[in-house]
Length: 244
Ligand code: GLP
Image (tube, rainbow, N blue to C red; front, top):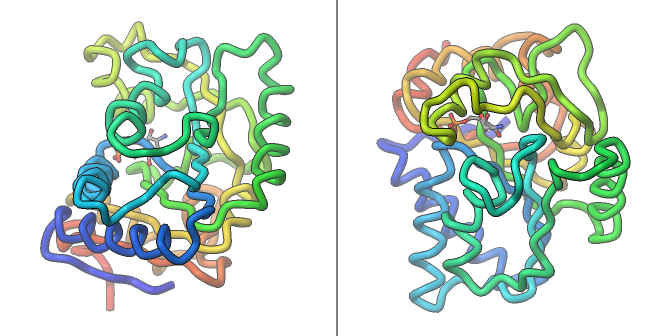
């Protein structure tokens, strides 16, 4: 695993945004895998700034988001689709038909998961997958468990994940969905390149587990140790528990 440590989250985000802008130039049809959450917000801000300066052209790129809540309409506050629209898609020149998202309102959720896998396959696979990480080591919504699931699937959300998403629902836990759809571990690990962003002290313990711990379903992100091209992009607080 390559590890890059920055003084603060803004510098980490700026470095990744610049890299993505270069990739957009070199490979305009790049397929990006994207996360939601607090962590990528500075990344999206930097990408929007680069786009406004004419340095990031999304017109031919495709995006696939990692996950979506079940039962929240895409335009409604709380949905990851709406989050992405506000943070990135509405502010850059991406072709709306190139935005790929799981539909948590689908009548047949299992068929929806299959459709997403096929769509990723048809797009030629994911070139660069950006990830955040939950404090419990989850990636996407692949929660710690005795067994992990390879492909895009339905997930029962654990309470820590529901709590950390409560702000999207006005802090009202009753409104936070209990289920989501998520890319699976193999879907993520098949990306040609993976960059995991982790910022803030609350991520320090799980980051150390990912880097120095064994590969375990109890820390889903630890499976990234098996990937040949993975980079951890950290700020100093998130790197503070790394044993040397
Ligand atoms: C969320 C998302 C993950 C995200 C993680 C961390 O629940 N499903 O994709 O990486 O939790 O979120 P944050 O960046 O807000 O800490």
